[in-house]
Length: 473
Image (tube, rainbow, N blue to C red):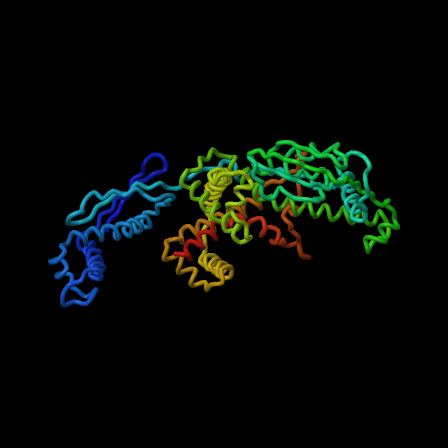
């Protein structure tokens, strides 16, 4: 087989493939073996009739047609590998010669992954939230703890934000109940922002015994519903006074307000730090894609979107949620639900292209031990042997994509450790603090990767999805 490639406009190339007659004859022979299993000939068991006998009986045409159907995809896959064509969609194939006899020639128009540049990737500055805990933050935390020791008493006044109201709730569309929005004796805290955007506003000022009727759109939907709400009780929270005695009786390890507050502040700073780390990868990839005008190819977006829909459906199934009922409850059509995730897919594709560009710019390579390590990691994840994972990738021509994913992870890790971090005021932040770095007694750098593991999990989804596809095949 001979093949060559020609660059076209618009992230496309054309592959030209020529298969010599002798080589293609092996495909025809395979086709005759398939035909032999289907054709009954006197004196021969099924599948045992010789090729010459079959040619005399049915002719060579059916076998050649079968050989073209089965062989062209194989030759195309070989040509793609030999010419390092980074396919992102099914090629359009046209057989140009050899339909009847002789050598087989065909050409395939292939859409390839665009190569982009990200100027300035090596000097990115990432803005992160301020980690300081204000006195207002601390007071809110103290009040939340006091509320746990509080008690509800009748308010004897109209409802205010922060009150607890007991409700009989009903919602319908066109006379039909909206699933999940019909309940009795529901205790709800005003200010939580549940049910609808204006639900708290509708209830504020209501008194025990009041009945309300209004039309609004339930959270997560665009279709309105008719609500009726009966307020059966309005209560307020009475909290104890914050004293050293209360702290000693209720915290278990602190005797004074000051000691308890200092511990609270430290815990809150840790929470802020962890929350900031959890969003770090998203901030970095968003900033990275902002450095260039990346067009997300439709075929890549559609592929990612399809995978997201499948994953979501599997999550519904695992949680025992009936998808059709959920769609009805949220007032969405399947098309709306799918399109609502398209933006996420577009962002994921742009991130993919940008990280690949960084990997190329940094000339990252994948060592054999790194590839074997990835097989071992997936083997543990899927409960299989590493050699089985490797075989699945090799048989499905998925190794190049796995290598690309490993390089992407390297690019992401490089970015995490080389960008500049500033807070919302523009003040430089300590990288060791942001990333959880420490140093040993000799001053050597030590990195606790536990926080990064959670952050990079989403980045490994593509690798895992590729693994699942390879395993299924």
